[in-house]
Length: 618
Image 1 (cartoon, rainbow, N blue to C red):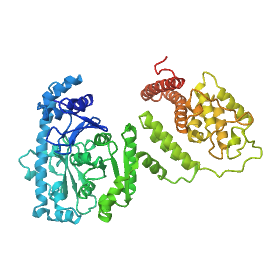
Image 2 (tube, rainbow, N blue to C red):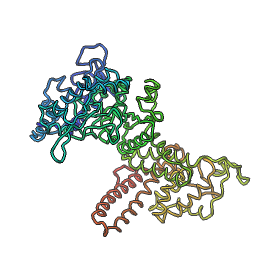
Image 3 (cartoon, one colour):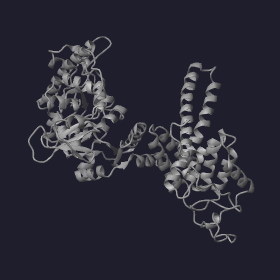
Image 4 (cartoon, rainbow, N blue to C red):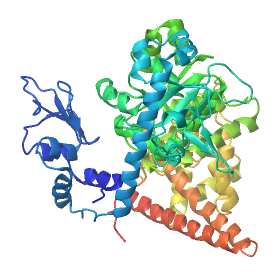
């Protein structure tokens, strides 16, 4: 019988761990977790904790740790298969039928792990032999202690193309090729992949050796400084995190996991007392690796070197993470001082300096803003507009709608504050009359809107049934004119796509140019701007609504208003190129129709919600 990792993940997701454990062990609530006296050893005070969100239990006294399956096997004494059957019955799942192909793969994997394990032993012994004297001197000169070298299994691959083949002669040469330690050429000959390198074993989450990393001791032209095993039946670099098997238990103690750029950074941090560090293996963080990190902690800390490459790596990681963000699931970012990696910083300033950085990381939102803000000079209006466009491109990739709206609001606020700084207030107009609501209450005397603009805005706010959302948005922006600049790009796009909306939007732009300060609103009587409605179904048009709530709802309304005509224009362009690329155009039409349907449903739901109707009303 073959139980796949995917099946086990589904089983764990359907079973509440605390419910299962509470049947035999009395649990009490402790914040987001549950606690009890450990059932695996005698104790007087609780040190056994259960975390339903992460799906594991852990005892800080005896170290017992596992998931719902291991609870059934270790505490109930069931076999693995019996545990799976009992839990599957409870979860309403079918236990997979026996799979001979999967069983054969598992057997093959076990055989290959035997090969890599024996190879690791050989590399380890080589470092401590006369042949490894130079490699050992290189490592000790780098400040690595004997205990660190032993803990991480440092070894040495001699400068020979056939040394491994001879040392592991009991294994077929094809097995050495399949593990990635030997290379087969086109003519069928084979030779050792790792030669003249300091070796580090790469282990899976269970601590089994599945691959290797090798580092040269002296720079040589045309020779890569670091060399990792290729992808093999044992090793998928996009699904593996170096040092995960050590960092997982350490992160449960620290409540943190630190991601650095390379495995030598992990080693340096561990020697300095930071045992909760992992690293990707020669590639940017993948979606799978991010999911692995989020299973450990809610907000992993990504630590990047203080150079240009580190800046680029940070932005790649941010871009990869944005679509995957979820409530209570994010990243934080640490940038090291310029030109330093973790080892350099620790050697120069000590572990305390590293701890201070890790204890005060930037949020993902702050890192995104700063990364794009400093990506290029912003000395012209066009460059500033480019900054806004890049920020909104990032925001559009966020799949969670609530998080997307919050990121959009925050980044637009930051952009507006940067691009449209407050001006010095001008003197009060001699025509201002005290006691009047509107411009007269503001600290400045703006220019008067043209009569045409006032008339257009008045008609737009009056609106009609067909244009109720547009009318509300226009009225909302008149009531909250400081929001016009924040949405100028979207409004300009809407004006291009919807001729009916263009006059009112142009008048809004004229209104925004008259603003000299951030007053409470722009409501005016007949002598100035037409007064927007109050006590409206939309929060941004009701008196007493908080500024934050008004801004958030108005931003959602503007976004929804612009999406449909944009999708309709994209659909028209796709239809126009059907003759040139019928297959691609057809696929694009299907995608756009789905998006249009989604937007139309959101528009209906938005209107019903604001009207106070049930979400499923027709």
